[in-house]
Image (cartoon, one colour):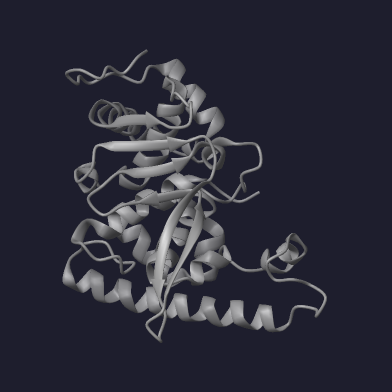
Length: 270
């Protein structure tokens, strides 16, 4: 099936396409029949409303579009696509890409550097993804760059990248209390881990990976509350029981906001 560049129309996700998605994305297998049918409709609507643009010779095909769309739609399974209305284009690089940054330090000096990214979500603009990090053989199994970047879109829906999507005031108060407590705990855990690394282990090297694996989330979550939310959202959908065990209050807020409990959908633990 081909998604046209002209007038958009709703294109169904047939049974074969859905089975292929479930085979490649294990966290879709826990959806019940009603959820699966809703997901198929959301994916079709998403594909009919977004434009996929490849770069550096990459031409996104239908399988790539569906893979990205399915992961983008999972966080809004029970919310709907409205939070994604602020953009149309998804830009797909073959692999990680560099973005030129400017940072002004406390002394007023401007530093320029290249930031190498797996994805980026722009406020009011496109979502940019590295295909290698979406589906490449070397991607981390617990990581999900699509969910991460689309979680940023949810966060940015009120214009602020603060780790809290738009929600009623009472829910927001509970959310921020749980988010800040979990974030502070995670930062403390990361700092303690790094302080305890052997002197001959470079924290930036692969040799440190075994130590960082003891953390409940990727160390990047310590960047700020917005990144903590995006990394925690990855875990919520991909490894829900690990997040629930580490931060049960935050997990409960996620269940309330996303209107979905992936841990329950995954069935009993082995």
